Length: 354
Image 1 (cartoon, rainbow, N blue to C red):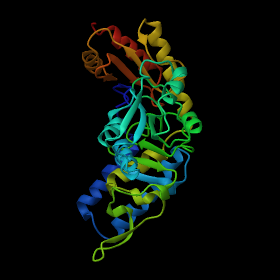
Image 2 (spheres, one colour; image 1 turned 180 degrees about the horizontal axis):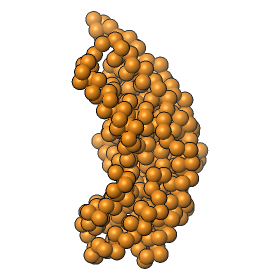
Image 3 (cartoon, one colour; image 1 turned 30 degrees about the vertical axis):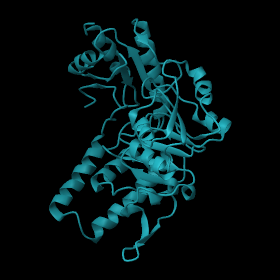
Image 4 (cartoon, one colour; image 1 turned 135 degrees about the vertical axis):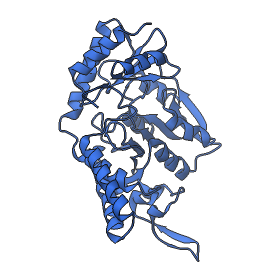
């Protein structure tokens, strides 16, 4: 794929490596021949869950026993919102620059949302804008680590320290893109299909103190034991109690392969390329809204139809994302890219009518 396309859309899906695809295909063929059953099959799947859990924990520098395996950031948010029993009369502070994957569960809870208006703010002003929304009634601050709109890094560490209010961090655009240490967060979500280059519907949630968050979305993988006749159950230790489903065995084997082959130096390379992308676009006269020194998303304003421009670029072999309702095009710059991808983006834009 990378031989054909300038792939700049890991903010949606990261590229799948040959190793990842091969491992998934090999296991699927085995399943087709031997079936999805038997002691060896299930023991292997369960053991791989522990391996993948540990590898995901390494990506955000936290202990593996504080990681639950999810299928998305949104599922992780639901686990937190339901566990905290947030609802009418409770207050949550968030921003107007969040993805619906975070805002949706917050809104559905019925809690009062205090929304900091940061979408057009300078990065240096974001702390104060969010902090100003925190009141004595605030039970949770729920914000991104990196804005999905323009790659701005949000100061969640500083907000947690300044307010002493629990923080839920949407890490969809951070884990795998930039170096992450989730220590200090109360909750941190991971979308593994993006910058970690994993299969669809894979991810994780970090919970700092599992004993303080009751499991509400209870499923079989989270139970250490249960008694159907008595209607009782005992949760697994740590964050394993929140495991909401059995991730398909083929997805697990693919995710393990993806996590094991992530190269050293990827964060530095991605940020250098993102800054180069930003400079190239500015040099060509485009209105780049991403500030210097942020993460690996570079967004710029398109004077015409942004959706049509993204489609035209795709036909030229350049894959970027149009952000609906914003007039922005977004380039997701990863370690797998090189200078030629950025040049193809600039050349492709010049050929798109405005």
